[in-house]
Image (cartoon, rainbow, N blue to C red):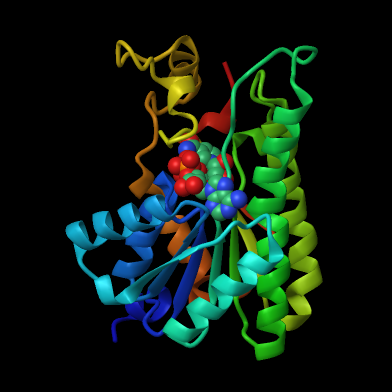
Length: 271
Ligand SMILES: NC(=O)c1ccc[n+]([C@@H]2O[C@H](COP(=O)([O-])OP(=O)(O)OC[C@H]3O[C@@H](n4cnc5c(N)ncnc54)[C@H](O)[C@@H]3O)[C@@H](O)[C@H]2O)c1
């Protein structure tokens, strides 16, 4: 085995990715599979999971190293069922990527609809972190698995994005809870870190960034590019390196509680 394989290779490991049918999850799955891991995709939508698996197996193969589970990660019972399915298929798992999340709409503070606010908060904080992390850490502690959790933070974890109040609140909390949970689970050898992607086109942010009718960037899409020193959106494959680093105990075994921005320099914010 080469030094690089020893450091970053994930043969014999299994990763669960929540929101597994999503855009970022697809790119992370590809990286993990190519590094040797099995991947279990959990998503609330059966269609999204099936499509992700057929897209991945069509492009890179590895069909036997993937499985899909329908799981609503706001619901503890649904998550426990997905844990059992994953255990039956792969005998357990060592990596949890909390990638269920996303935004809905944009409004002024005073026009923010509270139902929508609660929905987005719940999606990113409860489905996107709390419930799967509780269920999985309990499972890992019982099995003495020294697992690695990777949460999905955002640029909104550092600086508010305008008009997306619940998303801002939830993503700031994701970064905060990543640190708190890292301390809580350190005695069990469970690491908790996060990625903070800059701007990548996903299902739920597409309408905000690209005009459906013309295919041109919206004013917000143009703003994002103007604020990104690299002058473009990210390609989801650019999240692979940071993911493998955080997933691999050999590469990042003493790293916990951090959030890594992968943002084309967006956070520099100088003029
Ligand atoms: N795309 C970006 O630019 C970007 C930037 C920063 C952070 N993020 C974060 O990365 C994560 C993934 O983003 P994306 O753009 O790939 O999103 P996406 O919209 O493409 O995918 C999200 C997936 O989550 C699933 N999902 C929704 N609710 C669920 C639930 N209750 N249980 C299980 N699955 C559920 C959806 O069905 C969907 O397949 C999110 O947390 C998002 O906030 C994205």
